[in-house]
Length: 64
Image (cartoon, rainbow, N blue to C red):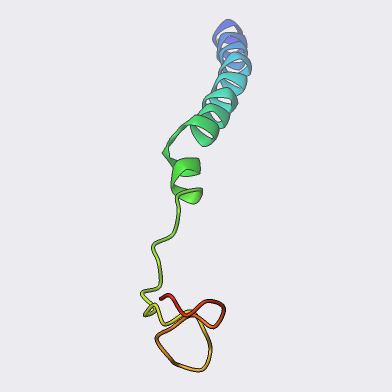
């Protein structure tokens, strides 16, 4: 019975670093980081004219 307990503890000691390495790999190369770093969609604000007085022409050149 003691042999089985030692074998299980040895297996657990080898399994823990492997599980931690898999977790780190999944967080760095997996979909979670890609999901967190994905660009957010625009808010949908209407794009107004270039100048602030509400006219349709640019204040610096009048071309737009």
